[in-house]
Image (cartoon, rainbow, N blue to C red; front, top):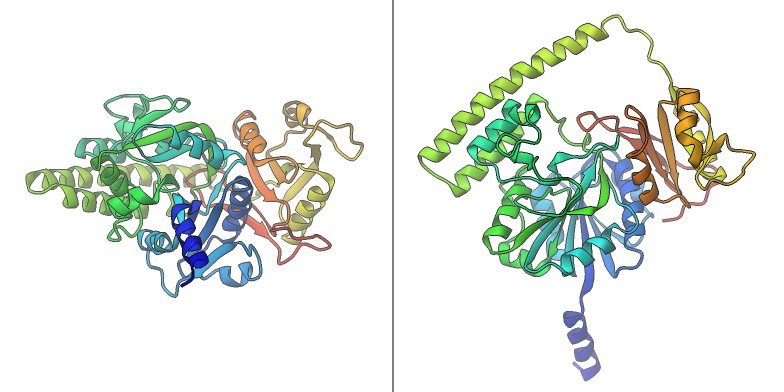
Length: 434
């Protein structure tokens, strides 16, 4: 081996990529499409790689992404290996100094990763970092910051006491409800939807425990990082969207069962004897309480919805430039969506005869036209601006997102409901930019 090759190998070892973004995907091709566009934008000024592990999706994901996102490393598993194992699979391939585990049903603002890396680097003894998350309606997701699931903490979460006393230091400890969402904090548990750490720390702590198939793996990794003497940090100075409805429905009995199983595994791993038995007893009690409450809620919803025949069309503004407005409208029309398109809102407050109004007048236009939905075309109008705006608009509004050059529009009305996707095979007369 000559000296030039030796020097090159040495240089690569000393100066690896700055960041590896790892995404595990399963049957969410349209959400992943939008997510990847946001990640590419957020990595614009960063030496980064993006690795997507697909856990044998059956929704045509492989064909959908063929020939697209050439800078993304897609791995197509022949079996669903679970969230933890797939992440570890990608981790073995990753060459970045920093590792970002990211869910496919997320949207990042353009400056998110740069701000996160800067925050992480300047915090003494930082082990891992999570971020402020909102759902598709702009509501804060409490799982952005959590405590470790002690028996009492978990019981309060599953029995509903946390919901009844959302800011209590005692009853709402699971979500650290007493800590403000707009301040940075040292916390116990970070969400696997967005977890930033380093390759060195993961090599030391061992990555995800593959016994956790779904749920609990982030709790376990957070615990081991903290036990190793590092700090888990909640970062409030940037906000991402996490649609959430694309996994097991929150509040469903299946979710409760999976959550219970993951927490039981966590307790068995770190505790034994009477403590573990007591924990399991509390969990079973909480599950029964939750099951009864869910049954009553389902019955009441069915009772009050009974007899409803017509589903009203969404009254939608499309906030986009002229080109994006046309492509969004085309997708809606080709899917025969029940949308009443009220008109285009210009995203830059320009005087535009083709627009119904400007973004500056949006609140007044919503009230005047009784709009129920905003569809955002992300092009010159940024994801960061969109995330800021949806948190300022009236409660009850629905939001959908379409990045320029994509085939889909995605959204979610509530964190506990399945996400909404509409798409076409290709956009007519439109250049695809990946």
